[in-house]
Structures are given as structure tokens and as C-alpha cells.
Amino acid sequence: MLKYLSVTPLLPAAVALYYGESVLPFVVTIVVMAALGVGLERLRSADDLGHREAFLLVALTWLAVPVLGTIPYLVAGQGTVAHPVDALFESMSGFTTTGSTVLGEISFERHSHGILLWRQLTQWLGGMGIIVLMVAILPELSVGGAQVMDAEAPGPSLEKLTPRIQDTARALWKIYVGFTVAAIAVYYGLHLAGFADNMDFYNAVSHALTTLPTGGFSPEGRSIEAFSPAIQWAVIGFMVVAGTNFALFWHVLNGDSDRLTGNSEFRAYLASMGVIGALLAILLFTGAGLERVPESIGQLSGDFENSLRQSLFQTAAIVTTTGYASMDFNAWDASAKTVLLLAMFLGGSAGSAAGSIKIVRWVLVRKTIARELFTTVHPEAVRPVRLRDDVVDEEPLRGVFVFVLTFLAIFAVSTVVIFLDGLWMGLDLSGLEAISVAIATLGNIGPGVGIVGPMNSFHDFSAPAKLYMVFLMWIGRLEILSVLVILTPTYWRR
Image (tube, rainbow, N blue to C red; front, side, top):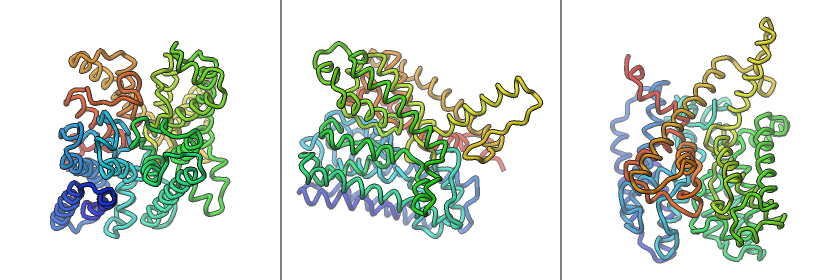
């Protein structure tokens, strides 16, 4: 896999050449990745991948690739990412599509076009999944491919679309590439039509590469706030698409549109964003959700279109875990920021590029609780939990509750760890800020509130805290249990 991934730095290298910048960071990356890949390939066993090996392959791949992804930052030596810990943080945040950053000032004066595009590209590669990409192009992984894809895929289970798992991987990546090209066309088309002067072709490609993977990195220091309302509305649409189960689009393309409109998870996904967006729109339009800053109130209070756009944008960005920002929501008051904080625990659809807990799990939790309340009153009743008219077995339900409880337990411990580190570093973190840091990294969301708000960075945290956040991003992207299982003694026993 490393051997084939070594070709990916060619794109930012070409961009660096176009802008007259150094290509050394990418040449070094290509050489190291290719040499390591070829070397490891000579050690490869002829045995097929089993269920246990799949977990180890996925966990190690998602650790090795971000580690090698630090090479362009370290060789370039520009800005804060020249430090190895910062470089690893930025790389892991990229490949896991988290979107948290330690760059500080983001500008072309400080960072080259090639390096900033590498940040964008890492998120695009990680969005649909490195393993899914490799299964799609490597015949060697077609045997055992289902196990590794299931271990990597975000959500309770992977829907097999075709008889051959390799064809399923290819179908998912074709849809992913298709929407990326569509985003580039729309963004740049708005520029050509005169609706977005600064959305040139470089920016169009850069933002398409981080919209579809729900990543949130931007070469603009002010994120999507730097662009016109027309671009912001377009980004909202593509974020909603990116947070939808990509398998549903496959069914639509094959003439089965009922699978989309009749999907209970998809309806819950849209409904949750609609409710949160409407609540925030009311708070912003009335001024009740804004800090008493005249400029902020003048921007939003009483302006229906602006209030609606900002509320829907931030709702979509947080629920889909994209992490873009159309304004600095640190200017919002505690009530509006608390609504956003709660939205961070939702996540997008299973089978999408989104992170966090996922809507389908909350749907199953709600239905299971409703069943328990019913059977408490009617103990003789048999009432199965259904999803899309299919009965959900007890084993997947148990897995959902184990995941949710494990996620919340790790989140709670991480909040305390980050809060104590903030005190040690003299950051004067509030409880709300520590909570937002923990969920932003574990849920692969990106920005938090306060010191880690959308226009700030994670640079001021200590090196141990950043390494801990790297661990949270790593296990969060792989749905926690896929990594934790290899850390148990039982895994290593025969």
C-alpha cells in the first residue's frame, strides 16, 4: 500500500513547480514511501488475510501513513509544523479528516502552495479510506478485503453493494471522485460567473478536496468566511452530500431512489440538521445567541438570509464533522455555542466520510430504549428493533451500545486530561473549552470553541497533549474498537 501511495505527492509537487516553489519535500516523500513500500513487500507473507490480521493491518496502516505524511512538513521547515510533534499532529489531522490544526497563521506568505495543497490532499485520501482505495486497485487485497474494509469503514457495518468486494470499493471511490469533480466545477463555475472573485482554480480544487472527505482544512486563514455567500451556500450542499451514506447514491444511480428517500437514517440525518439549524437561526436572527459585540450583532441580528446561512453552514459543518467555518462562532454566546457542542456528538451517516458517533447509532439507541420501556410495561411482548424494515439482531445492538459507552467514557477521561494539561501550561482553559477539544479530536470534527475556535489553532498545547490528541484522532477515525482490540492481551493469544 505504501508503494502505491508514494505517487500521491506528485500532485502537490506539480503545483509547487507551477508556482516556482521547491519540490524537495515531495521528492523526499516519494522516495521514502516507495523504498519502504518495496522493502516491506519483500517481507510479505503468501497467506491470506484473516479476521485478526485485518484489525492489525488497518490500525498500522492508519498509523504508518500519517507518520510518513509528516515528511513534506519537516523537509519544508516552514512555520510551526517544522517541529516533529506538530508535523505529526497536522498529518494525522489531515489523513483522519479531523481538520484541527497547529499551523497558526495560514497564508501563502508563510506556507507554499505545494505544502498547503498536500494538507488538502491528505484529507481527500483519508475521506473514503486508504484501505478502500487499496482494495479497489490491488488484486492482492481482494481476498480478505471485506474484513479490512469493515474494520476501516465508518459506521456499524459496511454494506456490500456488489458480489465482489473489489467492485464495491471501486463503486464507492467512483462516486467519491465524481462528487469531488462536481464540487470543483461548481466552485470554479461560481468564480467564472462572477459570484466569487477569490475562488480561483487553486482554491476550487483545494476546497473540493476537503469538502467531500468532511475534512475542513483550507488554504485560507479565515476558512470559508473568505468567500462569497454563493460559495457558502454551495459548500453547505456538498457538506450534506459528504455526510450521507455513499451507498445510497449507488442505489440511486442504479434506479432505486426509494433507498434514499425511504431511509430512516437519512431522514433522521436531515431532520437533526434542520432542527439544530432552525434553532441557531432564531438565536442569531434575534441577537439572543450573540455576544454583546456591536459588530457581530450588526452582522446577523435582523438579517434573515445571513442568519439562516450562518446557522445552516455551521450546523452542516459540525454535524458532518467537516469543520469549516463561515464566521468565527466564538462571537456567539454560550447558548448558541452549547447547541453546536451538542451537535458534535451526532456525526453524519454510516458509510459516509463523517466522524463522531453517527446518526444511525443514535437511531438504534432511541429505538432500543423505546423497546425497553414498552417491554417493561408488557413483559410478554416480543418487539424487535427494526431499521429500514429489517430486524436488527441483538449482537449488532450490543455492539452499538458498547461503542457509544466506550466513546463517551474516552471522551470524559480525555476532557479531564486536556483540562489538567491546560492548567499545567497556563492556558486558563474553561470546562467548555476542554470539552470541545476532547470531542473535536476524538470525533474528528476539527475546531472547538474558545482557544481552539475556528479561527484559532491547537498550537499552544504541550507536546504530550498533542500526542494524546493524535491518539484520539487515530482511534476516532477507526471507530475506536478496531484499534483498542489490538491493545488487548486476548488479541495476541493463540
